[in-house]
Image (cartoon, rainbow, N blue to C red):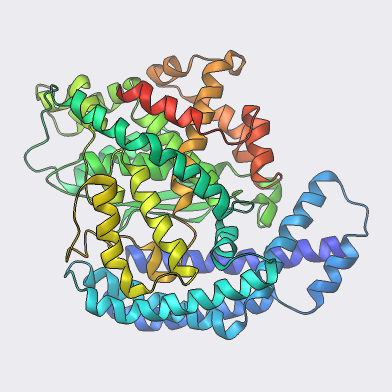
Length: 497
């Protein structure tokens, strides 16, 4: 057996344990009773340690060195690169830190589910203090190994090749035009009348409606399912994708579009190449690329006029409300493109969303680099929300700095992926519109109800490419250029002005 073959066998074994860990995480969020938290945290910590040990076995260094001397195909070289990247990431962090982070993160996240509802910053802060301290320790270790600043080292986990310098440039530019665009759109929409949903929309009916929309988006139900959780997410593995949403029986709008968003994540996972199943090269390229799929589904497809026409018909059928003006196409389109300055990121409209992301980026960047302390976050959050959107979160922790799940388990460096994903998604659509060779007019494909030509382009250019290329190479091969934020601005101006 060649050393390359030994490595592929080893990483496929690792993938089985990661599969089990993913399912334990999904169950903790969707099904587990509160009393199971401590035992589950310990079990997941034990599994994390085992995975870390497998990832850092001493013979791997020799295997990598020997495999690099073997005659490999272009795809095998890419696979070796991605295996080595994961190995290097794993060997940077000591085992005791991995275990401590898993325990602290599980404890903080589980308590947060109650503490957020109770606006309990004091209780949350006690747990989060440990998460932040351990994340800083990890960031310093990774930064020293990679020759990066602590925060850049954390970015590298989620967005290989992305740096604070590039994000500062990108987001500073957005901040020069976004506030004015928001104000102009708010002024424009003042004259529009919108009929908002009223009444009771049962969870069961909302779920049934969501399943119909997932069928329209060609979700493979033989390899995935829809459930309910406090915070919507997509988890599992490509052969068993688990997506969740949360329901409000007074308003079906958010849950429905949340399902569209998570289905985008899921279709990417289901579309990853089977030939590289269980190997790092067969995984999603980056979190930004992953978000580009969910946001392409939600923003480029889901909130388009032709797709809203499908939602109008399906939702009126589901709620037996064909004569209710709420479900009229024009009214639903206004609802789904309504701009409003709000507290909650996951409920934010497409236009104000980047402001939420930039705020989080600036805070977590300075927190991990040691410029600020975790106790400074509530006041900074309030200050930045007032500057960006003109609203205050003073003493409103549950709708301020405690609203997201990501920081509870130390996922620092993740938030920029959301706006990067929105930018990539706009660039994909611009490419599809310009390139008629893909076989169908974009809006006509959606209107017809057969979105196959669009999904085929995504499959050919994004899904089946997995991590065969760097992020820049992937995007350039698909669109002819690396990330160009001009497409994002043009998309927003075209839709909202």
